Length: 112
Image (cartoon, rainbow, N blue to C red):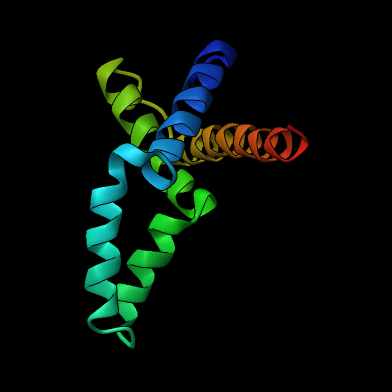
């Protein structure tokens, strides 16, 4: 099971990776290509899903947090030997920490 410092580290990493994927200009060309792909067939369910995913900090943050947690658990050899349900709870905790940081960032951005 991950410790509180590990949870904090993964939460911060999830927050930053989510900001990178959804907002940062370095990935604008990738997002622009995906939006162009979507515009060519706007009534496509899979295309709508992909555009919704890459536009939502909560949706993208959930999957990014899960991927970060999985990589971390595998690299630190903490994945095996524990119930899968426990890792699911860890995923919820990491994603929750990242979402909390996104909410704080959104709130502070409105105040400034």
